[in-house]
Length: 154
Image 1 (cartoon, helix red, strand yellow):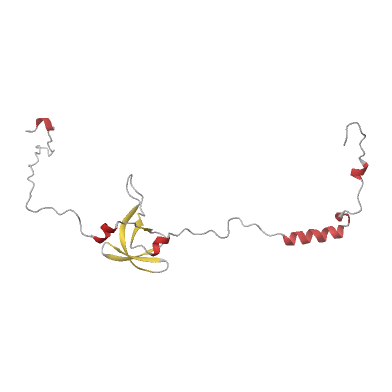
Image 2 (cartoon, rainbow, N blue to C red):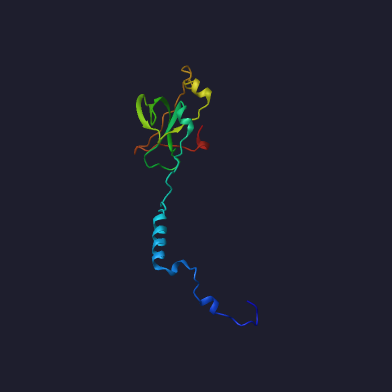
């Protein structure tokens, strides 16, 4: 369109001969073929890969989640527990001296130092010859413990 040139609306409004919807039978057939070719769209992804830690197949110790409601600053996981022979989906662990079967979905691998795993004995051994002498605790007549500040102690 150019400014100052009269508009010819007839060319826009006149029907053309090559229109596919001019024949109603042809229109219905095309509509049916389009509707048959429509594929439903899934509401969520069909394949959602599951996260799996590869180290679970080879780890020697695992952590278990604490299933109860936790107090502040309480750890999320308990353990580590020694992993005994495992199946495809379950672990057999040594928990408090008893064997327990646990699902692989619940556990996390424990990454321990090699020195800690080799030396299972505790590090601290108290010397029995050294004995601490404890002072008797002063108790009032009503049963309360008496604690004096350090500056008043001899």
